[in-house]
Length: 190
Image (cartoon, rainbow, N blue to C red; front, side):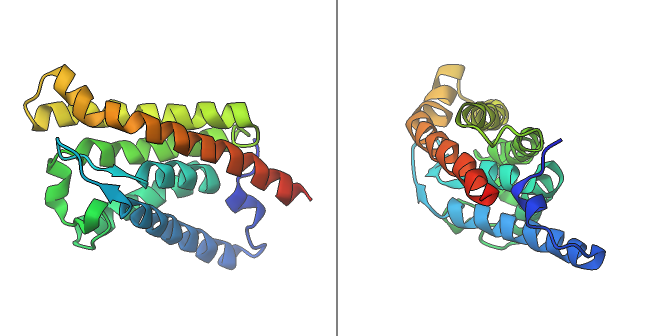
């Protein structure tokens, strides 16, 4: 089992460690909220955002448990009315809309990428790419069927509105993570 970035930088005392974990969960949720505000509207109600990059990065940096907790905190913040979702959207009703499946997928994706990071997948370019790709697949596997159902669309429309426009951006986000995460480990090693 490898350490995550969060583990390497963890304070040594138990009390400070718990506060540290809470701090990381809150910072992770805020990071996702900030990346959600980088948004461009598209037909079908699912905007292009920086959110998936934030979700997967938080999972890799914090690990499975803290990454999952950060996503649950993010969703709770939005559910209670904080404007954390794309374009400042808020409220429990967002979960019933076109993006609801993607939001649910964030929790699973952060957990998966965090679990892979705990096994050292964020230390090399190729395995980072694979981890981020798997995280994206999880998000789409939850989001596209939900979008299809909410919009009463056929599969072709659901893929056109909920997958295809995002692929180029996903390649860029994955490439960025594949550079930053292994580079960070090299810098921490020194």
